[in-house]
Amino acid sequence: MFRVSCIQLCSSDCIKNNLERTEKLIKKAVNQKANLIITPEVSSKFSLNKKKLLEVATTMSNDSYLLGIKKMAKKYKKWILIGSLILKVSKNRLVNRSILISPNGKIKCYYDKIHMYDAILSKKEKYFESKLFQSGNKIKITKLPWGKIGLSICYDLRFPGMYKKMSKRGAIFISIPSAFTETTGKKHWHTLLKARAIENFSYVFAPGQAGKHCNGRKTYGHSLIVSPDGKILKELGKKEGVITTTINPKIVNKLRKTIPSVNFD
Image (cartoon, helix red, strand yellow):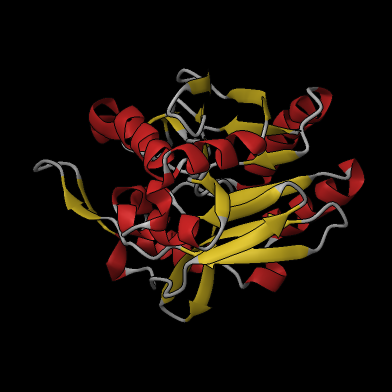
């Protein structure tokens, strides 16, 4: 068994400030004896301004937030999964990348968000990620000391086939760091996360952005840790904070043997 923490942030457009706030919450998770700590989507910078994002985004090797988190992972000897960072891959294109860091401060694995959030929720609320972001093309699963984890980001949540492939390849944990809009979060967040957990008999770790951000966008919060049978083990509201609980990987194998649905398409 091990302990997992999900960090909930209300990230601003200031990378330094976000890193400082993240470290405060990581310290809380460490005090709660977490072995794995996960931050939400776009932890380092929250902005909808295309020009600003292109100006401040760097490559993975030069990202100051990532460098800071790598130092913390080594300092506290913890696994830390950065929910996602916005990184530059060319002059006019970015990626939304989730990065797993080991307790020695090294990058273990990273995943680029596959499904771009192109949605028109109302006349005033529109999102077109594909105009700026390059989508990933590979599902990523990696080994932790307690079992395999499948990496995903936010809008990926709406594509169940992706998670079926993860579970068939041995993933027993799923990370879904997010910045769900308040509009869709109220309607779908809890239901979708519980569904992904039950369909795959997997633990779901879903840290979220929460509150009103400097660009005016409102995110839903309600970070969740869900058991393989769909039970909400821990939940936050709409403020920054940390949730932590104990995870028993053996429960996954027991459920999958009892109802072997994961083995079928």
